[in-house]
Image (cartoon, rainbow, N blue to C red; front, side, top):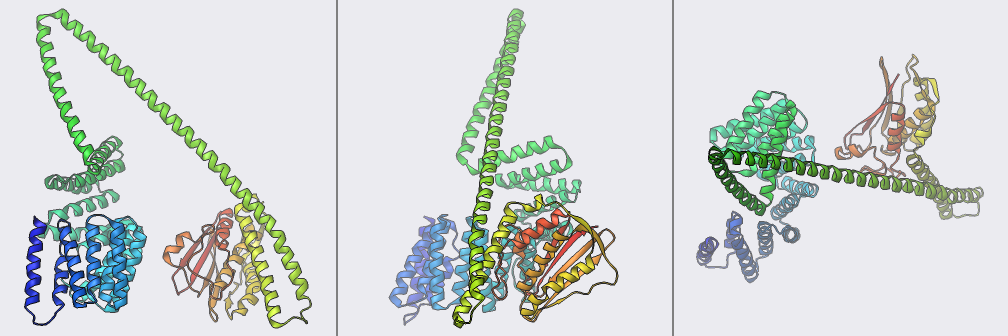
Length: 614
């Protein structure tokens, strides 16, 4: 009835708008669309009704924007019904229509809708990509409120993805836009997300500052709904700061608010924080109790039918308890009358306890046997995985080794052909050089795969000797000067006057430096520089290779040293890259008991630092 009443009201509104104008005017359709956007899920059927109505009327009036408005409302209707596949399909159609019309305000809305839908089906990466597109459109439109909204959404998504630095960038931008343009927008959500970002970065005091900003504002507004979130967040920060009295104060406040609001979901969340609080304090018994309470509430919330069943069982249990109490009262009266009967009842009680203890022992033994079988199954699976991994490594080794022969043969014949090129045309010579280059690249890839998969480092016996790292680096740099000069790149290294002595394996250090220098040249444009430097400290040396190349995206850095993982950055002139070089460098450095660090920013180059103990 509620949706029907609303439908009649809006139809009256539409009729009034149509009759108020003597000519065909489509503005009433846009006004109707704006009004329907304020509907909630309770009015889902009305949203679909007006989506169809706008579509029909727009066709009659040849209103080309009507399709975009109708498609978006249909997507919202499907999202209200949690039919996210259908919702996403409608949003994609709305996006396509908006781009055909070249209406960026509708394009931004469709992109945001897609982002929210993907976020709701637990695909935050796709949500981030669409929010980024929506953000770029809002920048083009120069609309402050849209820039604020998309910046805030991006900050929230990056928090969820575990990238607090990126989250802070967009959230602080949202705060700056709101203040600069004096937008009358509630910043509580932004401050809450900024606090969460600092929490992820373990900057407890900064996180606490933003959580308390929200707390003070919500106290002033008497917003108990939001105060619950504030108390929960503040309590969590105090746990991390080991300020247990303050932590307990805010956790208790959040629990009282959850109880007063009648929210079982909020109670469950508080129990989970209680569990963390007691665990950090070393009171594992209390931690386990609250974890059990959380699990019970959370499971009940997920399955209301289970909740109903549990309530029925509890009622039966209470009834049984009352019956038991009445029985015990009768037994007590009977005991006063018949002492012999009392002795019999005592004997029966002892027997019942014995049976209960026996059953408990059987259950414990059964549980232990089940755990033992599960462990045996896990061990079998691990063994199977180990065998499969060994077979994989063996297959890679065999294939790589067998491929080495054909590549060697190709190189040999190409070299024979290149020994006398007087009878070849320019294109034929170019083809021969390409054949030889491809064979070289193939051999390089096979060598790196064999090196990674056969773990040759672990079979390499360290050949320790005393090295002057100053002179050693000077030789390596000179060796790579011709390669750098081909790209008009300057490799700069100034050797110190004093020798820097290190006892290590010359071969392994040479491979480390060669890989880093080769990469720096590949990823640096013409006319730029590569800087090599050496820092000598009391206990260790730092070998630094810095370039002015394309740089590396922040999200790629955690995977930089992974095997077979190629990052988004590409060599500047299409040079060949196997994607294994940095993985090999990392293993070589670890074999020497050292570590390697990377600092980079897209468009500003990269700095690799190898740290070796003296």
